[in-house]
Length: 293
Image 1 (cartoon, rainbow, N blue to C red):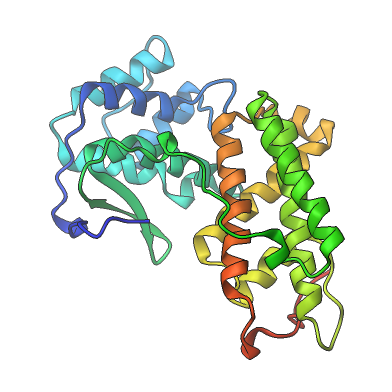
Image 2: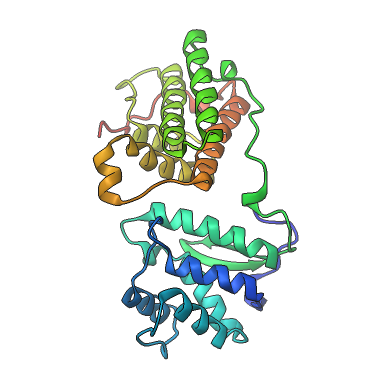
């Protein structure tokens, strides 16, 4: 969410502290444990795509070369702004929007202390200025569950089962088992949305328990806001890590921050659905276009 003190983006002047530049260089490079790892040639293309035409092949280590490149133009506000926007640009992550969402979140966590945030307008990233805060999103406590699953799930026994899974997911998270926590959280999201879809179904094809279809249905019916829907799709992809071959092929291992996203998605979904109960007449019934995929 953006601050009520945000200023128009046209007049944003970007100035970044040395420590922030250090972290920004790491975000551009990525490492072996991230999905956004960039080789030296990919880094050069990234800078060129951001309009830094003078950047050619990087000498030395990737991180050191990127950091020196950034520091060389640290007084150039427009150049820095272009880098920030390119990091969040969907065209940088074709066929991998999941990575864009994760990178943009990490970028905004970093920029919060400087008083900036990247938002989207008409599908393109825009930089806004707002009041700097020491409460970076990653430092805040996870979203708190303010509703009971009994307020959302129609079947009492099923609600108790999902609550047990939520408790197990939290235990896995606290115990340093992020992959197990994410898989469990993905199953909870599926269960909650499926139960709600069934309870609201009146005619036409019955809703499927296919998670992508359920998320699309929740968006079409207005049950969840756009930001929760976007991150729900990220969690849907992460839940597929239940297949060991997929995780091995992608070379991806989730971290604590990834579990935080998954937790917040599930809890926000439960809170939002509870706030909508009883559903208005306009949201009753399943979407005829829901697909069995």
